[in-house]
Length: 410
Image 1 (cartoon, rainbow, N blue to C red):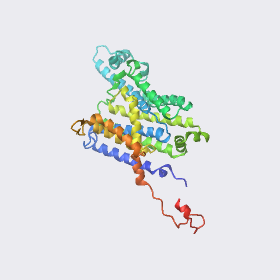
Image 2 (cartoon, helix red, strand yellow):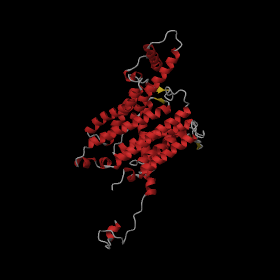
Image 3 (cartoon, rainbow, N blue to C red):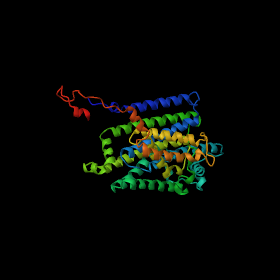
Image 4 (cartoon, helix red, strand yellow):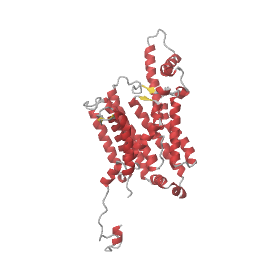
């Protein structure tokens, strides 16, 4: 009888169980729904870390399993944040404008309300008119569709152009980085329609939920992030465990041979690239309402490089390794940059970790690459690795009693 997916992949159930225990524990210790031992700021940090783990899984699929070192996946993460951020900012500003005009002698017209909203949002860049990209900002349903459609469509077009030209290796990495840089430079412009360098702010204020305190909202977003991460892990594990996973591993190891065997290599790569871009967009849509603000700096190429570092440190080619790497680096950076780590006085120089943690991160990446290429996840392989049984003298063939020492030694 053929074994089920979960039986063949026990790590999936272990991961889901650990994620559930973690989420329940944080909920019970939170300020909003628990004892108050964990602050609201920390709950938000943990929720955002789960979003980082989600995009790390996407990066591991595209790089660790398919061999495409994309230095542009954080651009898809940012686009997902911008799509949901437009609705959040529009709806919140609409509530403020309607409340401010409620005391007018004459009720405002719909156009007056729209003009007032435009002035509130775009006055910072010297405009009061809605750009075309905000055409559906008043519709939550449409913006949720755009959360997956915009990153997916961009990845589909870019991937089709790159893969059909058979651009591979470092050249493809450079192209993805160039795409990210071009998008960031465009978003920095005031006439981009997304408020330029100011970005979108106040995203933590959810429209129609003003009566719900941030302590409770942070727990709700933690739940949503945990559910999204769990579903993404199951999906990714299902993808890599079957024939499809074997093909993309083959593409990673020897693309020419897989093509020679008759597999449509470009189609496989395009599918993985597009699906992981959608996963990154969903992660961004969950992250930025917890962060409260998004600006073009979030889409800069350096963010995608950090993402590759997370996966490498955790152990690429292992889904749990990507999660471990993202969580480890994210929480460690929060600790270092939060000013909780004492500075090191060397006499002639003082190491301030707020500025030097990135150097430590880069050094750790180099050390992992040189001495532990399997990353932190490789340690788990050592713990669960099964020893080869001593079968000398055992019945190994169909004819009982035959002792096959040579086969037993293999």
